[in-house]
Amino acid sequence: MSTYLQALLGGISTGAVYGLIALGLSLQFGVMKIINFAHGSFLMVAMYVTYYTCISLDLHPLLAAPIAAVALFFIGWACQRFFIDGIYRKESAREPIGVLIFTTGLWIFLDYFALALLGPDSRMIDSPWANEVVIMGDLIFTYPQVAGFVVAALVTTGLVAFMRYTALGRAIRATGQDREAASVLGIDSKRIYQLSFAIGLGVLGIAGALLLPMYPVNPFVGDIFGMRAFVIVVLGGIGSIAGAFWGGIIVGILESVGSQLIPVTYAEALIFLLFLGVMYFRPSGLFGVEKE
Amino acid sequence: MMAVQDSKNRPLWGALILVVAIAPLFSGNQYLLSIAVMTLLYAYLALSWNVLGGIAGQLSLGHSAYFGIGAYASTWFFIHMGISPWIGMWIGAALAVVAAVIVGMSSLHLRGAYYALATLASAMVLKTLVENADDLLGGPRGMEVTLLRNAPWQFQYTSKEFYYVIALVFVALAVFINWRILRSRYGYYLAAVRNEQDAALALGVPTTRYKLYAAMISAAMTAIGGTFYAQFVLFVSPDKVFGANLGVVIAVVCIIGGRGTLWGPVLGALLLLPSEELARSFSGGMLGADMMLYGLLLMLVIWYEPRGLVTILQRWFGRSDRQRLTKQGATQ
Image (cartoon, rainbow over all chains, first blue to last red; front, side, top):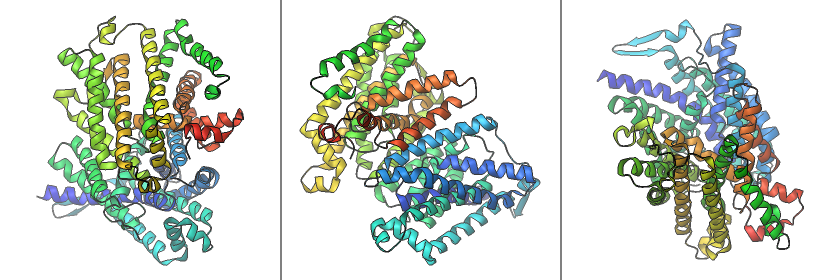
């Protein structure tokens, strides 16, 4: 029994980090209706930033999180400001296919740029902290697991509050619901897009820092997590920030408990099947609102 | 190539295309020919995708599923039952149509990004199932096509020229199918669905049914491309023929060229495939440099013109946009 409980709780903690990865994607998706295929690659960048900050400044991985967040925030802002915005404007009438192709190009470019620059090796920070454990009865948790869950929950809560109670957060949500109506009310949609893309990547920076102690980084690490992030976003409901968090936890549980019950290779299919089921019966996602 | 539709230059352009198309056959360079074959294969796949993704405007990212079904079906029937892949490819196409109906029924009511992700997820489910079918399909290791050397009736030959000619015929047929659809009443319905689904529905176009037909045609064509690939490479594995990036690449080739146009898919393949090869040979052994250039090229083309190469060439050669739009229903 305790094996299952252990798997369940372990799944919840990794799932929370998955949720945090998906959160930025959900925000971009919800506000701009764009599919950002480079999301996984940005996660890879975040993990490398964390890795080299930790190594060169001899920092604790958790202290590197704010640095990674700030770095990714500016990368996201610049990316939206200089590239995506132009493409988005050229075809704003429909769903922006151009952005999807552009970010696919960016995804390939970033992955192979990292390969050319840093080589194919998987790297892990070797911090004694990452190997320490908390023991509660029969259950064992590593510090990174605990930290991952706590920080992910805090960041999600913070962002939900930001979106709900601040003027800026309300402006972001208004733009997501109806861009024209929002601009009539004097909201500068261009600025809102830059901000939401940047916030999305900033959060991803934190997620990268939380993930690194649990998972080694290599140039292609983003491929797995990026694909999973899409599943989570749709499960939780596109645009729903709390939904991304819960979606992440569901996927985390499915992965860890599922692999206790059936072969690991099938657990992956289970995630995608759940995804298809949700798409069929509830396209707005498990936690999404139907339509205001 | 842009003036293909222009009646007074038509014979000239037709002759030029023909010369360029058969030129690689006389080079005798096997390396060059294999690049040419892959370019034609991707042109064919992009044209197949175009029926659903371009003309009907449904952004499928899961065409790897149909490609894999075609590759696996013909190979399985060949090595286990001795059925020639020339027949097996039709079995593959039929299975792909069934798959398209199943995928379509659960996803065609979704719109835009949701549909794209649902197709991607469907392809992933299928890939996982194939990877786990160790006894039936060889699991993650895949299957090898029994080597027969020169056996044209078994879709095999040692020279690349054989495959080149077949690929060329496939592309010609795919262009013809696209042209027929674009010119037909059905094609105009699909364009209506793409441009304004609600309006089309209100005018009595059975949108979901028509989208499903487009998906079935597109899937069958893609599956036949899968059989071609299996016979050309003589090896299939889940990673190679069911991989998520394959489904994305097929869509990318078409969109870079110009989705919903007749020649866009061919142009996309002509640009992307050879430039990937070129980048590889000129990268000077720097790890990953070829793919970096490939990614840059994608970003550059889309950043310059989201509607793709067809529109870029139109602008450069100054053809009136309006004429083209009515003729070919270029995207939006």
